[in-house]
Image 1: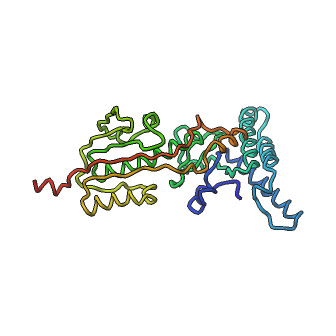
Image 2: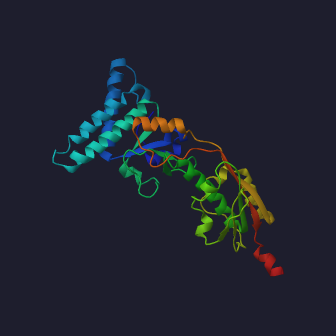
Length: 302
């Protein structure tokens, strides 16, 4: 299993092979590559077998230690990087090594390559575990906020589709899982659109909104969850091709993608950071229903 990720090859990697990453200085990652290659060559020479970089065959702690020594030796003891930065690098590398040794396939990413990925504002940071979006290549969230951000992204995409299709009334109800308190922390696209959002004494009603409604329905340019949601596709087809006037669909979030309390324990034990409070996975279903605006041609006939 590789120990370093190249963002340019993300599209050929399985999700399990790109899911977990940490970001380190370029020189540190280069040293890790060098030390791993030397270890592989030595093992191959001793066993007379092809070199391998499998995490199950390496003492990652010794590789990390060797990488720190290699990087630190390039700086004088008067260098701020040597006196402060090297200590931070050492701690982050040791934590990564412990995580690798525990069986977590966490890849190193160079800081220069991290600019090709998408992170939350203020990130990436040293020693933080980032988790890749399950269907949106190049998007990475902190381990702590992964479930909230992934669900928010999916829910926002559903709302965005409905607004582009011309929804003039949108009602969101909680069926199971995360409910009002969770919904209150989401960055809803409806709020950004300046619509009126109301609450109700109905415990299942998360919010409802009234919009002017697009009379010339379209679809958003960038969609990632849509390809995996047949019901959403039927709603879009019904609206665009057959004049659908009402809609009802669900946003389901039913897979923890291996981001659970066991992972949290392993990450903390290794010494990596979660990047905030850990949001526990809860299987969730929200129902979205409402009405579309009349088509422009229908208004002209009135």
